[in-house]
Image (cartoon, rainbow, N blue to C red; front, side, top):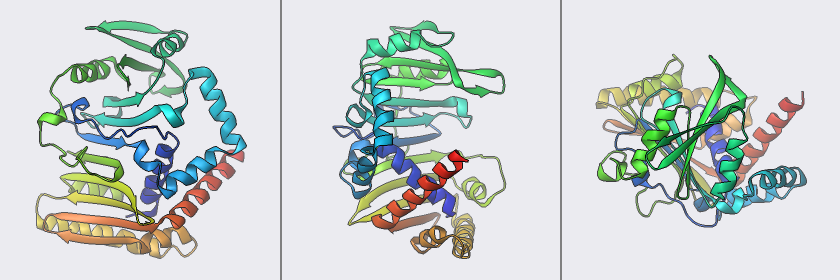
Length: 315
């Protein structure tokens, strides 16, 4: 696959490591609606004992990280390293505003509610036994101007969405509505015994764009992502399922071409390193792309990416 895609995968790994919890939080299928278009889950605790997780914990001990973390804890009375257990994102449609974020954490619900009420243009509404809070996100704007955030608290979960209706629907699922645990959709998600700290799946993909990444997804009936660490190797697997074997051949050919292009980037050693770590296999209507990279190399790429972003921010 393209180097920027795999770099994003490593970045997601880093994001998850910033929220390392005290106990495991695998995907809760009963918390996801029965017919999602896509799902992405970060089981932060599974990352904690890995070499990559330990590296990022070390990075968080640096003075600049400690200062930001201390400010966050002062505002929210919450230590994300110990009290944030997992993140699940899902959507029932292709539009970004259809997305929902579930945050599993040990938090002070009263404190969070007080902070929400103090936000710009705070409003609230009732949905059954639940309160849906909303406010203006002063850091972001949409095409209509100000962007409103919607959120609700249910047990040890905070539900976020861009529309009140999506948060309300998420609450209905959490209250026992139709959910993923009663279906065979995305069966690998939340499966017992998984060693992945990142799992994702999507279907009904109709994305804009004509670049190779978009073409791969358009040709695919479904896609799965699994990221984990084993024997000092970062292992990321992308499984693309097509409608038939002939389409899978086309997907495999496009993927091989993308890997070849990565190998031609002589001025980008990370791209070549990633390309050398990728294997492609076709099995009937399924194409499997596997990245198996020594964790030392993965950490080096993460360091280089962080340095590049810091330099760009300073300019």
